[in-house]
Image (cartoon, rainbow, N blue to C red):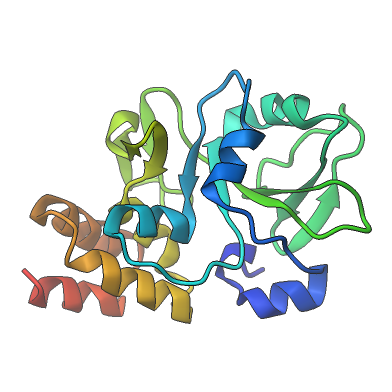
Length: 212
């Protein structure tokens, strides 16, 4: 089953309905008073790092997978939570219903008559270690995957591009082109090695070699 995070946005809207165009400010307000760690991933994280703007169809906050129930408690009575799980959407209206182990994203909206608000990415991360969801051989110390700007934490571009690599959607290409010249040599080398491990033969590998 194809992961939802590699599907074109227009196809997602056709299947599941529209999204409100939320921003970083909205995410800050969403997590006001939240007791856990959170950060911003996706194209917004690339834009914050590079300063290169592009249109965004949604915004992707992210939390450790182990904190999914903490987030559910934080938004209770405000937003409904749905599990995006292997191409299917499952309502989590019952607070006792567990988040499936294979769930990669939580989608939030006030109710079924309104657009989706937030696509929260669940990352395989502990306070010590981050693990790439598609290949557990690719890991980093947790404190190496984030950077901060104006008090907001973002996923580092090399980590985000690795997550984008399987999709190769037009926006993924734009983000790769924007970030490639802004990343350090160390970050570029890490991304190249991670792609060689998890996605051998990926076209970005050769481009990263040529850009050194």
